Length: 349
Image (cartoon, rainbow, N blue to C red; front, side):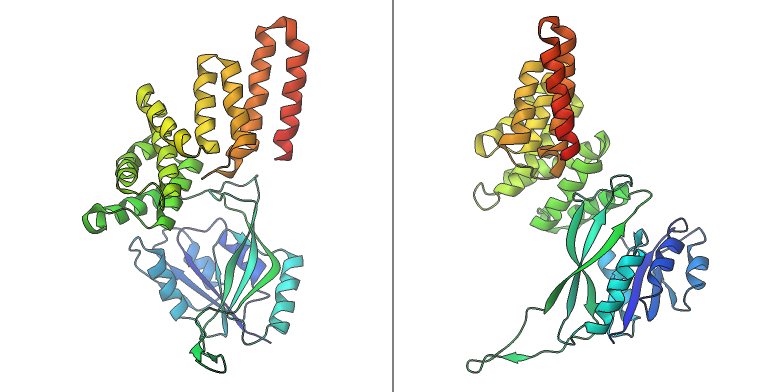
């Protein structure tokens, strides 16, 4: 049977840590917890489950903290957990069965990460396959009978184990601070990597407030200007989304339309259509608003926020037809039926 180290970095997780550890303790042969500066009872709770509790000075770098935590493990495989994760009874049985059957050549096991709408999260999916279990020591293997080479790609197994993500709150303010620090530290203020650029834009669209958008705007405007239209089209689309929302927040209509039009002239995305729909909805032009919400739902694809291409658009269409019903008695019944239909589609999205 494969052995597993449950490995965590934590800070002020007293409200969820016990729930997490209770759910995972049956599958863990070792529990390693690294605290990055808790001021509540997190460390005391951790100590009830393991004597391997370590301190690590937080330096605004999750990779450094996780590398330190991994260095303290000793089992064959490492499960990297967050304190707001839960492994229910059914999936704990699947995890134990995996430990029995896991072939030694498997280096990474992916599991289904499941979000629930009832819990606060900045994740942009309901269920997503992601790497969660890692072989602690990787061996290198020569492959091919001639012109042999060392296999560089890891052997990955996709399991059907579901990990429930049940956060009580999210930490977007902390994340935005790290993004800003990365930008300030980059050589000559160069753009973030495509991955980090996408993650920053996505988290802004999912949980940013007006101040967060205003803080981010100078970076995204510079990134748009420095990017190339062809290879960096996705990045430019993301910039348009952030900059259009920031302009709308500030009431700068000309600037708002500038960024919307830059996106529409290339390849419109659901988010920009939603921004235009909200603009006309706020003006009371419900017919024009409906055009853009329909475009968001049926003619375009989301770039950052999955619900922009479905649930959010249909929800706003329901509101549009409720408004139309109130203003046009002659088509009231027809408009209300449309509102009911879009509410149904909202629930299905």
